[in-house]
Length: 143
Image (tube, rainbow, N blue to C red; front, side):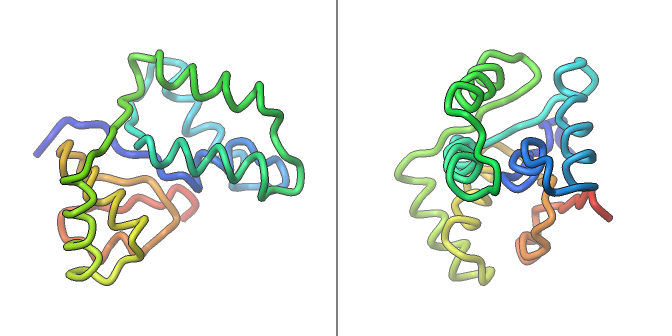
């Protein structure tokens, strides 16, 4: 058992900024808000932060202003309640092994490899395919 924080997946970060996502917006905003109130620590990969930056600027109906995106990223990077996980070349090689062994898309396998490297065992996401990786526990906050 580890006391590493759960990793917040990109989709949860995006929903917290996408008021058009209804119930998911409220749930994601409350979940992430727990870290700002010091009630829970979370992890996030640099990959999640990069994906989030693109999606909320380019792929939602009401794009988030660049300055707001930068402020959010800065808050996460400075917060003691968020652990930002980076990755290197060895992690990318491991991602290929995970992709081939557990039938994940490469980018999800890279996230799994990063989690493995940092001993993070829980991901908060709506993406059930992470259940293909035996050491990952998936928590779907939407039910």
